Image (cartoon, rainbow, N blue to C red; front, top):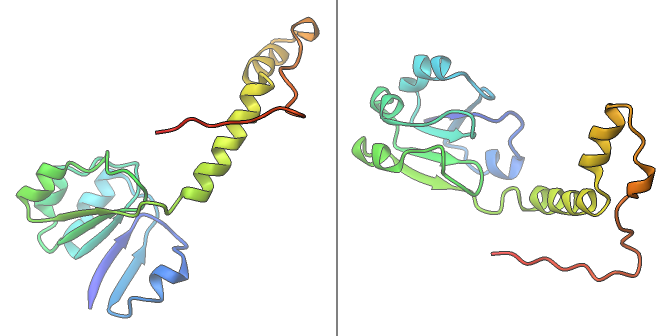
Length: 147
């Protein structure tokens, strides 16, 4: 049985139920110090984005074989440090696609209505009626240019 440290609580059952040979300890986000204290007990890590995973962590994790960044990027995992310690680095592209899409729509709506500016001014006891409240989206064509 492989021991897995998860930086997430409430992992989807599609993930946890499929792997009977794994003992997944859902600890949630730990501090770096907490992680350093227990990392040597685990074969795998499902990593969040709060901690920078580097040589100090990988060198203490003697049993660690795989670190999976639960998201699209691996910017908080030093890949060369992981390789030095024979730890494979993976990620889960698409895991947050719906959330990112919803957030993108939210930001587009906020930008079209100048919500950040209006929020700051209203909190400063200003009422910026003359500046308007952005643009209505009715009868507009919305496009997204991405890469």
